[in-house]
Image (tube, rainbow, N blue to C red):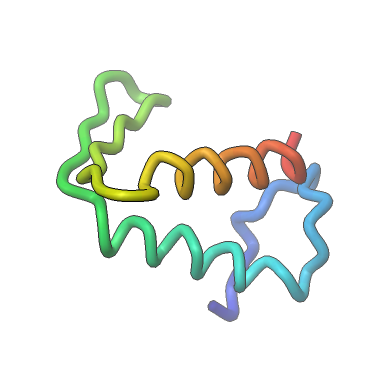
Length: 70
């Protein structure tokens, strides 16, 4: 997790918190990602397995990401 150069300049998340956020996304995808597709060049669809609390977890991560990267 040394190279976070892909993080957009508009990201307001403090640098020291970025590896923690990436780890949360990595954990979600490693636990729940079942497949993905790229219907158009700039679009990616992720398919996640459901289960207790998954929807809330995804909504929380998306809200956090939307709040710091605009």
